[in-house]
Amino acid sequence: MPKLFAALLFAGMLPFIAGCRSAEAASSGEVKFRRFFCWGVPNTEANARKYAEAGVTDIEVKNRKQFDLARKYGMTPYWKCFTPAGPYPQVVTPEEEKYFAYISGRDLDPKMPKAERLKILHRRRIEKQHRYGGEQVVEVDTQSKPIPCFVSDDGLRLTREKLDKLMKDAPEGVAGMFLDFIGYTNHHGCFCEKCLAKYRKFLAGKKLADTPESKKLFYREKLVDYYNAVITYIKSKHPAWKIALHIYPDFRDDHLYGNRIKADYCHQTVAWYFKWEEPKIRKYTKSVVGHAKDFYPHAEGIPFLGLSTDESSSLGYKTPADVERELKIILSAGGRTLSVCSGSAIIEPGYHEVFRKYCGKASPR
Image (cartoon, rainbow, N blue to C red; front, side, top):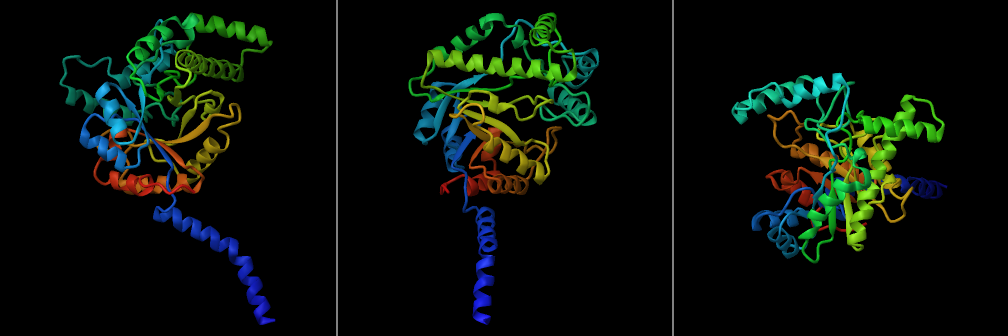
């Protein structure tokens, strides 16, 4: 009986032991990211080598030299980054406009020295709890620079024109293109006359009342439609190109809507520049990875991590130990791909070693 009891006890503990070993593997760096997207550029031989050593597999390039460096060091190059086009800046509420003017320093002397100006802006942004396009922690927050009203770019006239210019000089052999900064200045909509007219038409067509929920549906629909129209146009010119995009800025009414977009690689924030708690990072990682194919079977959800290494900035600051903690959480939640911005932070002393540990010399599992 004692032997039988011991055997049964050991068998019952097997799942627990396996779980512990799995956790130990993640914490030791044995489990690693298989793919690593960098929102930086390989502009010198030295940093191209460092990016490759850190495990970067996919990277933006803006000229032929960067393209050649990426290829030389075994990284997949994407040709430039498209940001939205529109006939005028988005229109926000008077309160949001006042906030925007304050954190962007519209009242400051344009001849003021740059260092002095930045010091004032950092102080103001800390005061207002500005989140640089991440999830808001106060009721009113905006981007610190305006975004064009892409909803009003009827027929994608300006968008197609901008894309044509970007694609014109793409070297043969690029994998595709990055997309970023597509969203709303105030995180929830644009209130220009064209947008409001389209909103009224949307309500009539769907027989909906003018409610906050209706606004959310409309502005999310316009956002997703624009992404998909841009992707469709790029692929009409380059069918084999892959599209990697960062969902940014945050859409406050639906943080993880990216799986509605037909991108090949959709980077969604699971850890912003400002430090988030472990349960949130874990929850977002599982959602980004687990629901990536809900709308498009070919899509892959990429966990995105924001990283600022400047302690004096109003943008959140993380130490190498903070980054390691977040990488371990993402890995343990099932993430096996990674996207990081600022890209240059990846190769800074202290941080570079952390990324090499969890992204370099990957051992797929």
